[in-house]
Image (cartoon, rainbow, N blue to C red):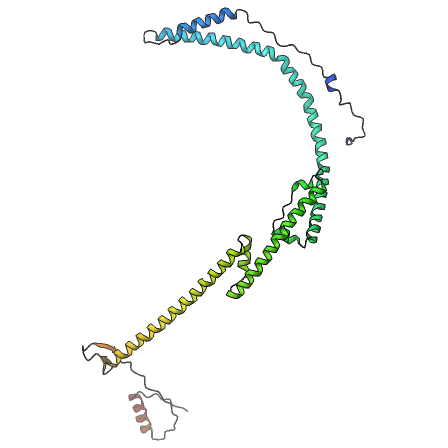
Length: 322
């Protein structure tokens, strides 16, 4: 296994690259022999056929003409590509040579960068932890807790973790935020006091209204509490009024039934309206009260049999006790 290379090893020089990397080149020289004659020929052909109209009579010959024009155009383009490719070969080779070196340099650059990032991150984490501790200390000096910082959205600036970020700037920015939070907390506590007092006066649960301080000013909350108390009072009064109205209606209905019943005449088990003869309701039969007595009867067999027959005929319950 190869041992890890360290900075103590002798490395090749990476200086004076301009002196070591000497590239000589000449701009490509192209001579297009016969260009003027060919260009004149193409210009003349264009002038002859510009605005040309195909007709049914010339369709076949025009189709053949277009094929010749296409072939001529393709020949010119093919020659252009051949020349450009030939002229570009030195550039292509040069680019591949450079890439073969830069790809290796990229590899070792990335490897060393990973190692540097590891230690940079350790330093950044150390500074972050130290900053968190110092923020808590500053907050404590200002009479604030870590919970207060969370409640009032203390914002941690990630740039504070950078090695190059100065302690003076860090302390100034933290102090500015803590001053704002101290004022916010004073306003919040005053709001809690006002809300608690109003909740006691209105007999309302308090926590919901305190939670509203996160999104509303205390003045709006106090108005909302007054309105809510009025609504609750109105609901109670409306319920009481409906109950009283229902009780009155029940009493009136009962009185009406009583008066109507007093006018009726009893005929057997029915109540009849004497004016219309209408049967209003049947008179409920009251069940006779049942009594129970225990006594001893003496007599002849015939007499006891006759007594038992009397009980049965008159539906009198009895039992024989030994």
